[in-house]
Amino acid sequence: MPILVRNLLVCFLFTILALFLALLWFMEHRHPSQDYSKLVERLANDQIVMLEFTGNKVAFTDQDARTFVTTVPSVAQFLERVQGKDIRVVVKQDRFNLIYLTVIAVFIVVLVMVAWWSLQRSKNEDNNFASDKLVSLNGDDLNLTFDDIAGIPEAKEELEEVVSFLKSPDNFTRIGATIPRGILLQGPPGTGKTLLAKAVAGEAGVPFYSFSGSDFVEMFVGVGASRVRDLFKEAKENSPCIVFIDEIDAVGASRTSGSSAGGQEERGQTLNALLVEMDGFDTEDTIVVLAATNRPDILDSALKRPGRFDRQINLLAPDVKGRMKILEVHGQKVRLHPEVDFEVLAQATPGFTGAELANLVNEAALLAGRNGQDQIINANFDKARDRILMGVERKGLIMTDRDRKVLAYHEAGHGILANKLPDSDPLHKITIVPRGMALGQTQQIAISDQHAYSKQYLLSKIIVLMGGRAAEELVFKQQTTGAQGDLLTATQIATDMICKWGMSSTLGPQAFSIDSGGFLDGVSGRLPMGHDTERFIDQEVNELLSNCFAQALQMLKEERALLDNLVEILLQVETLDGEEFDIIVDCSVKKEAVATEFPEPDCSTCNARENCSHATGVEDEIVA
Ligand code: ATP
Image 1 (cartoon, rainbow, N blue to C red):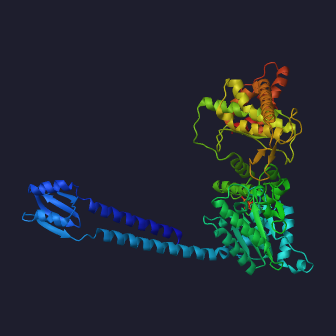
Image 2: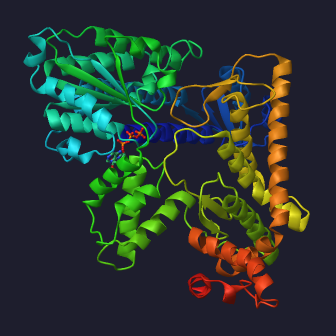
Image 3: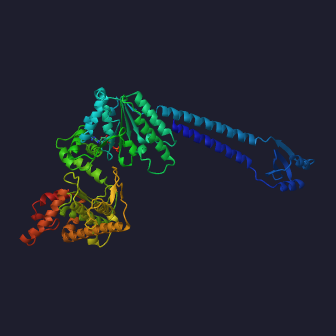
């Protein structure tokens, strides 16, 4: 019986019971009650015309045909008072309790039967637990091979060894080698962990059991552990095979963290069962357990012990070459215009994971389809990338003119500083069109993948972040909530500079906080330290941020003319890309240079447009 039907049946039974009890209650209380003394008094005054007895209860009807109920202490004694009077007396059997008890009994029996069915059903489900998770070898998923994966050559190489072992274990066992039993694929979301596991199964052509850690997490203590045992029993019967446990942190989290109560106990038992089963392989059991996680930091150390998940493979966001290869893999599935250059696109997508790149290609294809194009062109990729990075345009949002102006100054402030600071990433786009959660955005994209950041680069980043608030203060002498995100990011960078990277001149090269080692954001904590040190750190962070803000303000004061000019254009065109921005800055610079040559230049819109070498093209592009 499916769970939904089972639940509906139980609800139905409860509803019937409730209705029945309500009916009985209504029958019982359909007449108002009166005291026994009232009945005696009315009997004595000959006001009663009918009496209806049900056990000790009596319903009496008066001359006005009104009926009341009451309970008599002794029916026999009461009847003596009635004798000789002209009153109709009816005696009924008291079936109320009988009916009541019967209904309750039937209900309990039905409920027990439903519970029993459910139990049987769960047992059957658990018996088939492992075999239900067998992914068909003929299915699309297991047609995957290593060719479908790009950009992670080291991981592929590691797993190729596993594939050779699964294909011909004798080559390894005859010289006494044992392949790692467990391989842990760890990395941020979307870096291809699941894909890699499926490709191993596809390449090796062996049964592939795919589980999620949460499949083992149940409300009842012991269910998860029994599922683990079932899984390994089935795997041993079908070896050689691959068992894949995605999001293993759901069951493999450290037993020392948290309390030992409730769900912890169930998780602990499941984890113990997993540890025991992984120890229990024989050398001839050709089973490889692959597991994936974004949180290796919280895994129980017993899981990573040699003999269990002793091989760990890190999957990180691909580098520029990797991104190009991944784009090529996904580009094969769509129709591309010959102008599309994945090398350029890969350079413009630093930090994108495999999943984001796959999404980029698909978004571009959707855009092309929506426009009725036959092929995907570069512009589709540009739009798709903006959509992924900045969110969907919120066309319906209405802003007042003043808010738009404040927003334009805020974004222009970021933009000018990004453009002027030599260590800053180049400006990619600046927009005052609300997208996603943000009202406006200034986007910078690094020229190349960076793996280590200099202090100067980080300071530039903070100054650029401060540019929005600084521009608002400079022009409007006010502060707005628009800087919330900037301040948060700036504070995070400043804190990390001082606490993690030893970039404080006062505190020196010392670390005060530690990353947990997980691949999800925001998992770090401060090391134990004294109150004085904490106070110093807070002071340092504050000083660093204040200095950066002062610098941002000063730079914008110096570039006030450019700022005003930029805002004017931004309010007209709403979005400027990096090239357009550079041209406007160029025009502005040339204005000074030109102004000395030509005493009265005509600079009405872009100021000095006519005298600027880029001018004519720019205006058309921007206005269009
Ligand atoms: P999570 O940790 O969130 O489970 P994951 O690391 O398991 O993520 P996958 O499910 O393997 O990520 O990847 C999602 C999709 O991203 C894949 O179906 C594939 O289309 C694409 N992808 C990711 N990495 C690669 C890659 N290296 N080569 C080609 N495609 C990739």
